[in-house]
Amino acid sequence: MKTIGLIGGMSWESTVSYYQIINRTVQEKLGGFHSAKCLLYSVDFHEIEKCQEAGDWEKCGEILSSAAKSLEKGGADFIIICTNTMHKVLGQIQSAVSIPVLHIAEVTAEELLQNKIRKVALLGTIYTMEQDFYKEKLREKNLEVLVPEEEDRKIVNHIIFHELCLGVVSEESKAAYLKIIDKLAAKGAQGVILGCTEIGILIQQQDTSIPLFDTTEIHAKRAALYALS
Image (tube, rainbow, N blue to C red):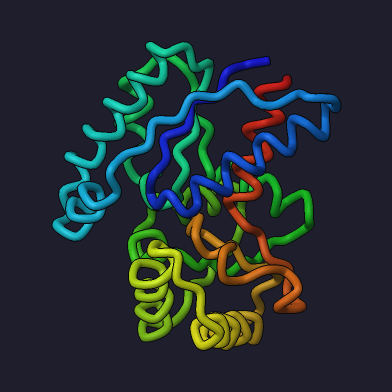
């Protein structure tokens, strides 16, 4: 079994889900008392969030590259970054280590294609929805990507940072997300990417008829399977 290196803490709320999914997947595949071999480097999200807000992505990359180097030195065979937004600096992180970094958007695109989805809506932080670093990975697989209108993007982002990252889950916010999802479905979205690792805390498949693709679930499961390959 390969050792998984996790860069987490962005936020720790979703990192908990990663740890659970990875270990459950390994246990399901191997049975008995098996669990995943993994190392976790959990950063201080306050520091990362301030860099994001200031647009200092270089500093973000330096912090996460340092984490990646520590994981490699500790014996990790590959790395996953337990957040969608920080894949913006994946190139910087990958160049700092000699082990692979498993890209969350690439494995999500593979999942979408396996489910015959061609036109997909993307929910996430304002950076993920508005910048191209994430959407381009989907478009490379010939996927058409829809994002919410500007006011709805602000709502999605606000709920992520001011509620979900702090462990706050409200029915009002769930209703707001479902209304936005319905608008995107009306524009032809065949599925919805929950493109922030906290969104799955708020929205689950039983809440809507449109197929949801939770990046936390997809990324963590793929990491576990990769570790067993």
